[in-house]
Length: 304
Picture (cartoon, rainbow, N blue to C red):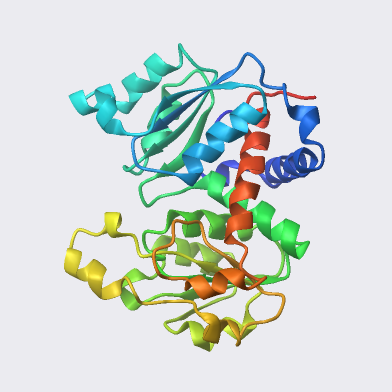
């Protein structure tokens, strides 16, 4: 594996290796404190981000490496019209590995085609977000103790939710996984993903009401309705409050169900849910740092 652009770039053994390494880092962080000494990560964020960018930077620093990069396209030559391909050709002279976020689908793949160093897709438009998927897998495995025999509900924006698309692709590789796809009709899962699920005989149901399935779920994955993906402000306003998880709905769920969210949330999870022990979205953030540490080591082919 030279780059990580899509979830499907990860073979089952790749995924297992990264998750196992992340577990080792969690148990013995001091052992890995200097493994990236002398290495540089370039974080190229053409689109705003808090958790993903900072977790990559924290990951590299905790491995003993350094970070360069930018947090906005406005401060780069992209504002002058420089292409992604040319930006990568320049940056690869300064860094050993790149984490890139871009609003256009396929941009990370373009970068990989022109790069001599590893490229990590940190989100490209509404397409994919594979490192969030690794985060989600590590979180589920760490908290439930398994990645099979799971019913997962994906709730909210399933059309533009790149985290949802990546997670579905990843979980389809495990045994006895079933999905509840919870969304308004305007934000249903893209047909090409649904067709793949049908072709692989993956059980799923599509519903509009969270209450109709919440009692069946082992994992509830909430997402926000993303204003930045809408061309029409009226449509966004009409759909943004389609699903709000509150204490009343949580009373209907299993005692061992966990609630995840890629964040940021707006108002789709009420603040009262934060005190519920099943609310695991802030633990999820911490697992994201560890899994990105493991991914950086894997792509740089570093061992302790």
